[in-house]
Image 1 (tube, helix red, strand yellow):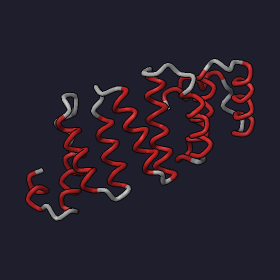
Image 2 (cartoon, rainbow, N blue to C red):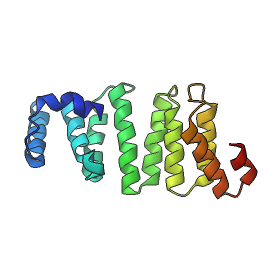
Image 3 (tube, one colour):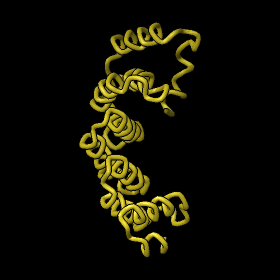
Image 4 (cartoon, helix red, strand yellow):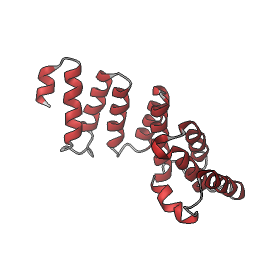
Amino acid sequence: HTLYNHLCFLLTRSDDDARLIAKLQDEMRKQPNRPEWTLLLATLYDGSCHADCEQAVRYFQKALKKVPQGSRSYLSTIEQMAICYVELGSLDSALMYTDMAIKTDPSFAGYHYNKAMILHAFGDTRAAITELNNYFAHPNSNKGDTEAYYNLAYYKFEIKDLSGALAD
């Protein structure tokens, strides 16, 4: 939500959500080619523990059409959409956007970790293990990531690979 933090100075924080939403929608009408307003509105809907992910997805999709592909805003938007789709229970869409992030920025190992967490959350432990192995095999992964090693060991324990769990 970096974009949200950077753009908050443009709006008064004392407004309630309805007025804030109206202001953002007005700015979107005035400046239709500026994705910042669309992203800010999507982030507002996505905030508060993903309060309205359906609305957030709608605005994130609009923003994707406006932000330059491959930019930091583009990658952040893809990542947020994947999170929203997890919240909405849509594994296929969450994975599609996570795979899009991996393809767009293959240098970031964290997308493999995120994909593993999504796969596990939806019950595909074996695929989650494979993706965690992809994470550790990535040249930019954090080889000392104890949480990822713990998850890998736990997932192996779940599938009854006790020697693999102990090794990790």
